Length: 327
Ligand SMILES: O=CC(=O)O
Image (cartoon, rainbow, N blue to C red):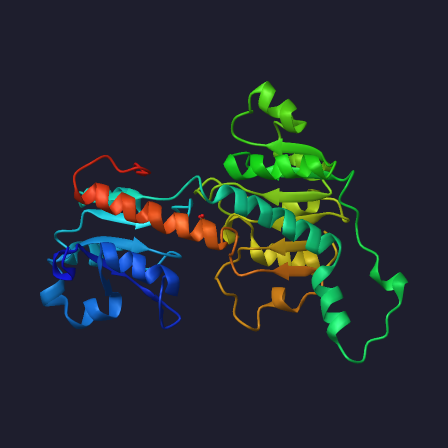
């Protein structure tokens, strides 16, 4: 197909660069005529009728009423990752536009990230690395005691695909596993990983040495973990968040970490992302922060992109969209 015949797809720039990986660009350009937001805004009259899909990578571009109104031939919004909290599904659907995400492929890597954060925090990897590479620190073994993971109790809040994969991994680390979820898992699924259901979230918070957040962000889970919940946790416990920053009341978390209400936090997600450079979370020794990279491995990101391309092509051909998200 000639490039002019390819469907016009809108993508955004992130930090001044096109919001896709360099090595994905060739593949994408075989399928679509990519238009950046900047190009679109500079040439709206010519481009608005041509754009038929939006490729949402890392929550960009923002899909708002103004954008939807300006694109009369828009058919598909393909969003990377599993979370769709950045999309107003009802609004988008009211414009006759379909939405897709990439729900399955991200689970394994995100669960690995949960384990990585738990191990890094409990064994003080970041502090240890800083010390090891610093030219003038003296090493006293007694200063470097961590917290053991094996035998500890892990409380998983949100036992969906990602939470369950965390449980599978934690079982291999000989952890005791508690979980809280809207629905209890089947008995055979629980026993496969040795997970015990806590009907009340508070019970899980009180008993866990590590509390890992893998719940979907919805109005019901917004700031689910606040001052009260942090105070229920053990003073020796660590909070791990691989879901969305807004599951936690961040001000309450800062206070809890400063006052040793809990021991530590390991966060792949915050709000905003990235945090302003003077944010108190960045100054705390008992905090590890990574830049929302739960699913960021080469293979997974490549598959995510392929799935997004498939969804756009299916939607434009009027075929069922592989991972359509219904409002
Ligand atoms: O944040 C990542 C995702 O929603 O997959």
